[in-house]
Length: 105
Image (cartoon, rainbow, N blue to C red):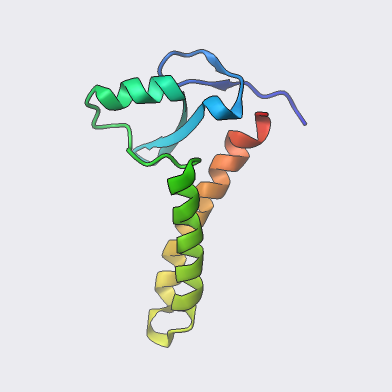
């Protein structure tokens, strides 16, 4: 696997371990933070940084629920287009793993 350096958005230092990584969004752009930098960013009021941790328990739970809901909505003939919304949630979670998490131990 190639050696990719993940840089924290706030302190601009390298993130070396997966346990230190928090992936969240700034509008529609995914960014990486150290856990302590993310906590500081949350204490300081910010309109730009989202509250959802994409690579944490809540992000994983949301992805599973979106997948289940997407499958259930596919069974309802008039609402099949809504299943595409679940693909967005699953896609964001997959992109987070592909872009950041797979390079860390």
